Image (cartoon, rainbow, N blue to C red; front, top):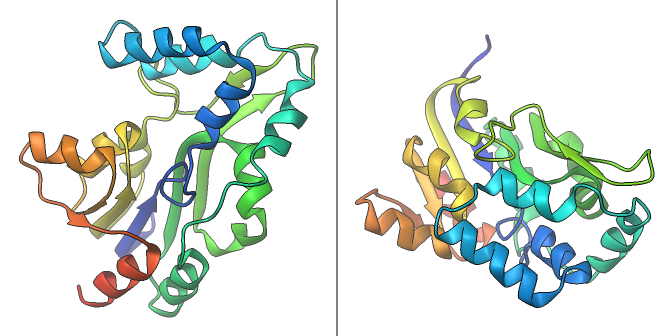
Length: 211
């Protein structure tokens, strides 16, 4: 197992992107009332995140995948992200993408940067048949990607995470340094977990340089 001095794990939806591409895809084809019911069940713990994602996407017409990719063309990458990757390469701090999003949606936005990452983990959409099928190598029935499990595959003196929401909570709690924005800030406050507030990737770069 390779050992790293510092290692960064970065979320995708709502972190690298300014909008959540999975939610944007759900809103493309799902009735708003049904989407609200699913979100409520998830929030109240009646269903897991993995169950919610499978329930929304499994069995959909496979032709919807092209529409989903086209639907996120207007989603922006957060300011300073490419510069952040370049600077981390200069500092020899590897970056791992760790996302509960889907490969085709992610690659349509940052596929040209894939060689800047040490590794990339994400959900898969199988559109080879008549209907869509969602899976991942780290689906534990609770999360589509168990991010903490992936983090445990790596050895490092300092594990740094960058996130914004519910799917980032587990890895934020287990990180040495957690960069948080959005919903993740409130969840870490509630649990008394220290975090570094950030707005864009220029912020992240400056603060990592100062570590």
